[in-house]
Length: 550
Image (cartoon, rainbow, N blue to C red; front, side, top):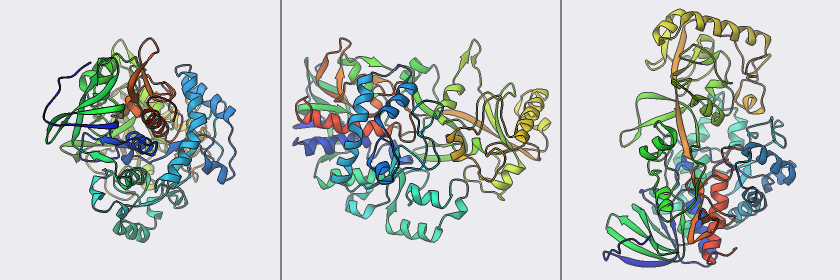
């Protein structure tokens, strides 16, 4: 385990946190508040991680926002739902810890940081499971209020910003505007004023509030500092850092907390576990550093071959930074009327209105010939174009070249290289289902999740509408990961374990670097951010107390 000691620089702290996403920011705050001198190391020049690009929701059953809004929840119902989702692949003690500690962690963060939370707007993702919260207007998620980035002062430039643009509204405001389907209903005067004044919302607000808390505590934050090695013998007692000013060792007297994200940008690890590499929808520093360090010190690695992800598309020439493509998701578009998703056989193969994590799993199903449903395309007609936006293209705008346009379904089939007779049959069956208002094959539009993103003005089923009015359009659907969820197994305080079940002294993990507490499941909105924050805080407290409960 020992790494070669560099003489370029030597320093020490009580707790060293590796990674500046929401897990790392929460861990640093908790360790500091538990009395530990803390150093936070971030491999890039920005803090906030991929959560800054997200909606910023946090899935926390029995949270105080639900109680404040008069929306009941119970531990028994929440545990029943989590167990059903996890399918026996998650240690029961981690699920119980999450339920018991999660609400208090959110209280702590709201009380001790500039963050303010409000009740979320989205249901649990699987209302077919017992214990799910799915009634209209109910949610187990909470979300940040808008945040004034001027509070960050001169260090505002440290905040990772979303490549998709800033939404300076809370979830509740966005819902009142009905902006999911009708972005034109946004109060653009208010939006412009808030942007000019420096306000951010959603994931940017979440990261900004946590970053402000770290900076206001004067925690030692070191950017452009990549950690590739752990120090010590039987116990971890430091890290080897590669920084702009040179390599150096940093002693950790009480513990090291890995919060480096997943390994989706490491082509070798992805190929080993998934057999293919696709463009991730995450920050490019999620390259498996934590996995490899934990592996070298003998950690038990679990949940292999599982990732979080969604169906996406690419617009040629669009980049987010450094020549990397901007990956766009079909979060809303795929479940709207007048559209379907088909594979190379011209067959529908999934409920298009299902949660994104479920659709990714189906996209990646294999048979003897490879991926059964790739390539795939979302197909829609002029009815769709007249009513709904597709990504950045609003109704009434001309179709760009990447949105392939065809005068007939036969021409579309020929252009895509899929069987025309099969496509005609698939569309005919779908159109009959749309007229009846019931998709007997997949149940599209029947779940609470589907109804949340569908068109309530479309009857009798808010997700079903005929595909019948030319011209027809096609956009290729691509799988993309929003994080891997395999890694070192942790205990109820974030301590990394060996295969024997013994903890590795001095080593902790939280966030997507660790084996997900939910196994293969994605509970609901904020299903990755919630565990990252809760176990970030628990690990920070435990490390500050020398491995004991905080």
